[in-house]
Image (cartoon, rainbow, N blue to C red; front, top):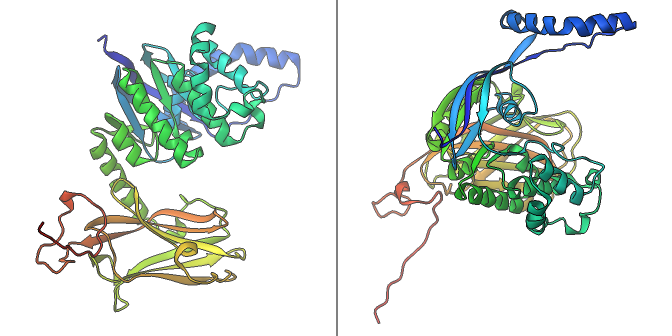
Length: 422
């Protein structure tokens, strides 16, 4: 019992959809509304199961987290991940159920949470520490460490409302991780920082766990969840769909996501990012004879063909095809601005593009392909898991011994050996 840091029991949260605020034209109307409000809330709670204008962001969620455990929480957008962390952070109250928390909680949920925009970085460090119940001497002891980690020394006495989103996140994470909370809640906000800072944050969360503190980590970075977490919970439409070993939970989640994507034509996919001036409509794989395929042998030629529609002209577009493994890690990429010789034509009307691999260098396995088009690094259309390709094992070295993926590696390349005796 004493080793449980957090227990969630039948936690549920309901929201009203499109609820308009009631106007009160007289003082009498306002007074009557205040008196009647508790009874209305009780009635609404009792009838919320049957209302068409309500949505359950969470429903009957239960789990336990041990002290020193790192729990990953994954799920599609709208699955209830952030709502869960907001309840655990006491930002919002549950509609039903309860959460029992043993220890001081530090949270980093989204840019803007926890800091006062008019205060400087220095003042917000002390404010956050005070909110956590720390004494000034404790904050003083950690202050230099926080500033060094956040890399905002020059702007420490500047109001944080003038910080960039990256600076804000760096300082917010440094405060949340270094002020020694027993329980640390981290949302996908780390995606705002650059790659180097994200790696530093992941190392810090690992250090926090090694010190015996508890971490709840929400992320779409499946590789980070798999490497950092001891256990994983997968949410689906506000309910726990699966939980247990991170690798197994992630595989189930990605398989379910891929199946959901297959059910929707690419042109109608709404889970995409970018301005939308250009949108991909179709994608397919072609073998060396131009036939459409879903499987290809290791080392065989492969062409990826994608068609697109245009809503606004696009100058100097950058196209990208990205191959991702079963943990959604990019293992092979092709960007037009890196490999195409000469300028890329301006996009003015619907068209088709092709990218050819003379010898696909991937080990055997199943890969997802993401599509990308951008303008000066700003996404115009980005679609994850637009298609799935299976790479089959083959004797790529001509030795009669096909490579074994169990020996490690995700790619192969032609090479030779020489041996010399002394």
